[in-house]
Length: 449
Image (cartoon, rainbow, N blue to C red; front, side, top):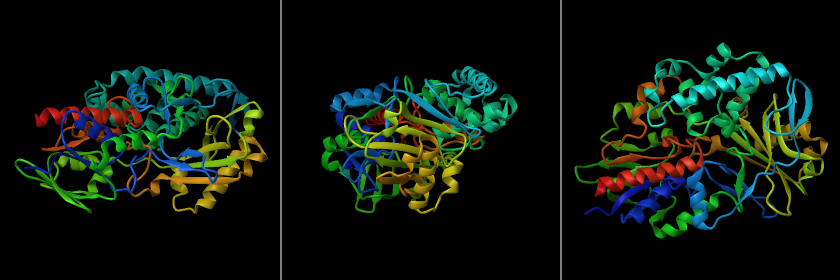
């Protein structure tokens, strides 16, 4: 008789949600987590005075119904991302203030960006969320990068540059890295580009009081001792009636397994028998994005007193996007800057002090000399996280979806797959991770019965 019904590999949001749903269905579960904490790519940190800041995923927005429902069930509150006043755009050596979602750029640049977005928003809904490879133009769209499409369809060069900036802010990768088909699927999954890019009415609209990791901590607390930390899985062996899961801390038998780690990291697990060729080939082709989050902590959010939201966009890096990341109510001011894609790759291996120094230079360019002298700087480089391999999620290059896409969610015998990369709605987001965990739990429960 198996030790448990289901072994869940990974205690991120997808794994914890899968375990939660399976437990509710009456199945016994064991969650094996490599880290000494739960949450995966969701992580809280603290400033020197104890203020909570989010080092990983942090925002939710309209349409993310599953994470909203879970937060309400767990009694967690949200608050709006600070969005009162003017935004700042640094473009071609000039600094401009503007209100709303449309930056103050030269009219011909704005026209080019708007025309490109209109085209992309018309294409994205034509990609089936359950099977992007079945789109009528799947071969054509998956046979080129987004960068190729931009060069063919977007003018002038300034519009191309701003669109690339938007892409890197969502994927932590470059337009030249991404399959056009994958980009269109992702956009459709998240409600099209305005939803992905915007604060008001978009995916960056709200944050969690006390930090987003509270979701994972609350789910893990409810699951209790079935969550085992510091237990990376080394091997999964499938037999006729059950499988054997060996981790660094224990060996157990189960009737099924749910693997929720980032696809590329599943290659660290030894599978016996080996995974089907298409699954093995797929995970070799799903690298993670590159992002460094840099937060500067000040006595107060001084930019608010100057009529600024703290949001900036810049055509020069390494920080090209900023947000006000201050806590609700009285407290310190926290400026958040993102180093993404090629900028993050260029700083790979650099000391945190150097990353912070360069980030502060970007903050000062957009918000004045006061931004160059914070009380402290916090740097979180997700590419250095051994059990994540990067953030925000995996991205797909040309040819991957049409060649290996069906293997993304298809079980391999008693092994099932989940994670935000496997979500059909809000792929790449916390909400997508939760949806994926619930869906795989439903499928596994059906298989067990």
